[in-house]
Length: 261
Image 1 (cartoon, one colour):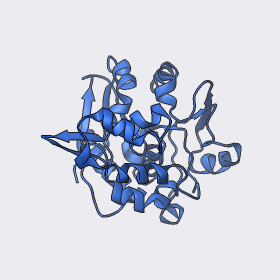
Image 2 (cartoon, rainbow, N blue to C red):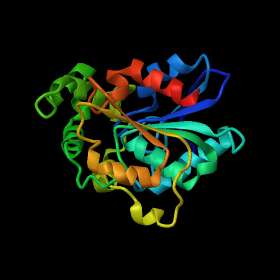
Image 3 (tube, rainbow, N blue to C red):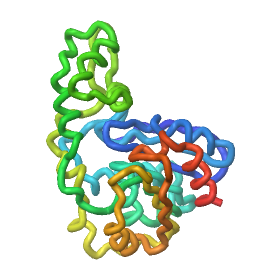
Image 4 (cartoon, rainbow, N blue to C red):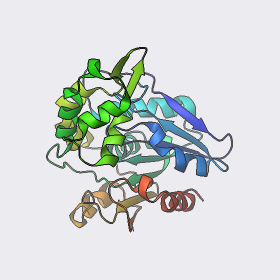
């Protein structure tokens, strides 16, 4: 499986970005472009998202191994990357660093922890609303926005979900694999602890960014994060919720500059 990527910059150490659930690599565009003068920045569409292939299930270990294959192909062990991941992408990045540490020099985890969150939360409702949309009846993208309004009243969230809606000729389709992601939401909210038994901690530098207004990173998760990533530095970003890089991109850019200096 070859993951779709977009690259900015031609020189400097590589930084690879992984998005969250229902996202795409391009969610990191502003941050990647801001760093592209001094780094080669790569935006990855994870499996079941964007322009990357779909498979029969979602599994963090499989996703991590696909990421590792991509990193090995693009850069190899002689040029380990700074791997950045938000939410779902943060978990995939952590598993990649643990399983393939030779490919990862530094790690940045954005508003997620290596724990099982114990449920699908609001995401199950988003899947249900997207699946219920009558794509054959759509004339314009604004029709889809209006149809989702009752189920997804938050305009920012609707716009985020609708980035996955693509027009092909006279028809519309979802670019995200709703069937698999909806079915495997428990795996998405979980953490493959049993699959990581015996794996050594990642010894590289780790930046852990938490949104000050988010509930995803809490104090009781610190011990497990430090067990797996002994060189972690936790930074709480004020004025940001779960989408830290979208809400405070200037803070994330500066933090990554410091991490990669």
